[in-house]
Length: 151
Length: 272
Length: 81
Image (tube, rainbow over all chains, first blue to last red; front, side, top):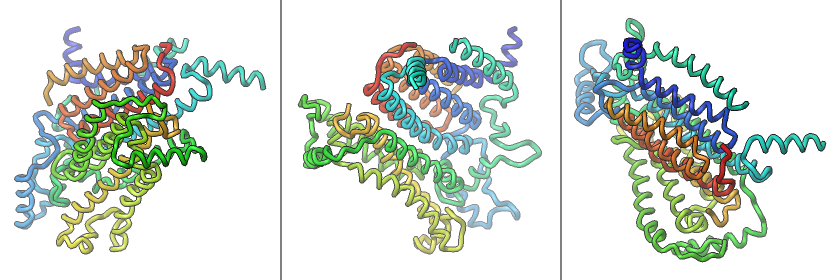
């Protein structure tokens, strides 16, 4: 048992926690009755996915992805001297010293788009409350059923 | 019943995902496939970005450069999605009444005269002295900080999205402290709707401008002759800044539009 | 990347998520959800994603909570589950 934990959970403990958070969000999105609670669950689901992406770009002992001034000027000098060895196209920055910037870029826009779509969902909740007087899913379904029966 | 189904679905999905977790690389491994590429195969594109960003754009912050230049299409259409969300909330909630228009313009003029309107339209007339005074100090600082974030996206963390949200939050703070009327007096509805569209227009316009120099869409290096920068690298840096300004305009106005419509159920009067 | 801090923050994150989903008072749930956003912001700063942490600090801990509270004020505050 201890051996299994050591070889399976410990190297991937963060992914296990992301899956737990993701399943909490999924459970709330399916099982909760209140529409606002469903939206909170969906947002938690979304953040779990964002966490998964960003944690892919983490490097042990790496710094934030901002190339500091001295290294930047060294890069310009490198190009001024003809780009180093023949055939070399890239400045020899060690990529292990900086976190992977690509997941950050993709997730940064996703967060802002996420809050904009959350606003649309909340607007729909307000319209539903204006029409049905409640945000509980079973009561809304009952009212829709009675309207259909009348017709 | 619903909860039982939810629990069963969650357990099955969770078991499948946890089974797949074993194939992921170790947390913090600098040589995992997403970080350095497949061994013996192609190099990950993030390595290319890290090594070439300063040479190509003179922007120390790799995230800003990749966001606005290398992956400009992505950001352009994300900005369009934010604009669409703002328009959707407007279309779902906004109630326009012809009679109320005269009254609302009257209250806006009062708010424009420089005082925080401490009374809401519900007629309670509460004077929120502490909140109003604190706001008068905090709001200008927050807006200055927002502009700082937009302008310093190149050498430090920040950029159009973050600065735009901070600017939008400053207007929301104004609305929370002095009623929505005092915030709408400073950023009227027709102004923020125009500002939101203008942001996307600026972004797409800078991209279109490079088409006139026989280059690709969103290739800011083509603007070096127009901007008199002397090199394509600085032209890309200035192009990124222009794009971030457009993003900030859209995000500011859409965030304020969302709050203004949601907090008044589309009436744009009274507030919380 | 600081491993002990990462573990502590992730445990707090799970607790915040459970509390946000369990509370029947929606206003309290929205506030715990803002706390959740702030914890996520701390995790991203700890992972070295400063730009993402900045965005989450303004969006997750600020705007989304304000929008949710605005909606709860205009609709019902109590939740059945």
